[in-house]
Picture 1 (cartoon, rainbow, N blue to C red):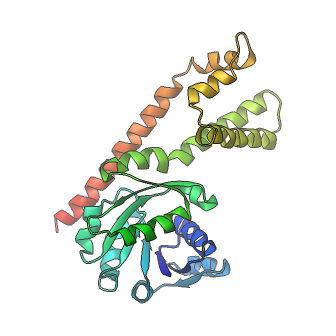
Picture 2 (picture 1 turned 180 degrees about the horizontal axis):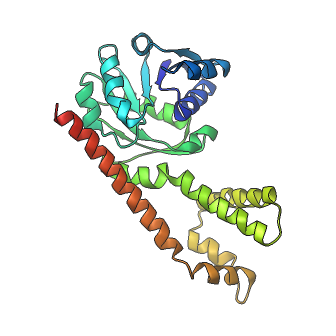
Length: 268
């Protein structure tokens, strides 16, 4: 199966890498000359000609910035007629995509940076003309990036705010824990490894061990012990409120971007 990845940035490169590893024939399209050279050095098939690549593609993965979606789709609209396009452009709704290229079939997906290590949580929503065969093909492709989950598109801004932004949130936590390790005399590299491994282990306790966050906390918190002393200090700071506020603000920003994108086409 021939797949074209339009956009050779960080996400596009990661998607292409995972799809090649999964056995797909992948071509990456990219306009920037220097970036083309970098991708070629990594062993990818690369071209600057979107239309020529799409003409011979079975499935297209759209990996451009939200502001570039309209121009990219208009460029390939004729060659993409009847073909499945998986868009990973944040905040760009299905209705917008279908208006630009009405004869294509669309699935909207929201991965995160963890696709670079095949550990993304990718939520996706489907257009009304997606067949079961289309869906099967798309799930196979997205599964090469990590875990997948179908959602109603009305939740996509929330998914973007929580899952799409999660690597940044958790990186901030890891950095804070690393500095905490420095404060108590541990080396920087060791502190960071401890923090990262703790995130992996806790995630597995939830996903594989079936534990809830409160159960995990209770399992390591004993009366008068070390953990409860640390938790006592954390409770002085509104940690939960900070995360809730961050996700809420990110969701509103995603909605704002989506609204601006949609209004741009309605004004034409």
